[in-house]
Length: 96
View 1: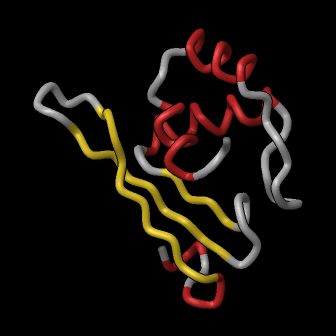
View 2 (view 1 turned 180 degrees about the vertical axis):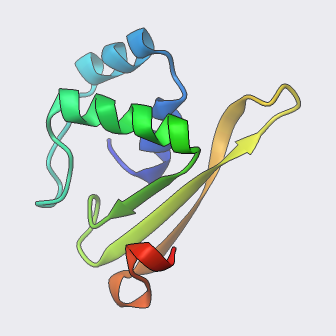
């Protein structure tokens, strides 16, 4: 299972937990834009953690953009996220 929330929440796991998750749930290509290489995907998770949000363009479903942002608890630890999906014609990455 690979979608916006999972990718975002995976970014906040430590490196070992991310590798364990990838071993348990191998990446599967859903569209031609889906990440299917573990090394590239792990680098993307690091980038998501650094920037604090996740943007996906047609990775899960053709024609769909998605944005995920963290919801922090009392100890400033992200345990869930808010996602917004919208059709491709509505936005371009530079305008998000």
